[in-house]
Image 1 (cartoon, rainbow, N blue to C red):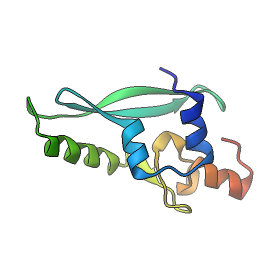
Image 2: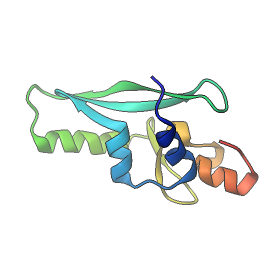
Image 3: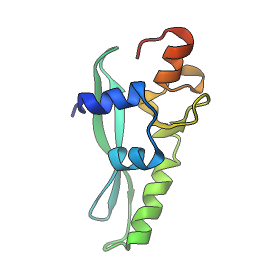
Length: 112
């Protein structure tokens, strides 16, 4: 599944809050927590797909769901914090040296 141009633009050109990241990249389906994984088919061809992060017991409480979603945000397989701006971003929006696309572009002229 490809994500919207709005979502792509927010990832590459603006800081997003941790809450925005959770809203856009972590969801629950029943008792399963899923993470939106970003990958690239080319320099201007991002795509996303949902991957299972954690299956909770049947009928999880709100607290269990929120705790699992926070664990997903803390998992470096899916999200990292930019070393320059400090924003939490999906790993698919991170460049080498621990920089997000926006910061990498600003420092070295990299085009996301």
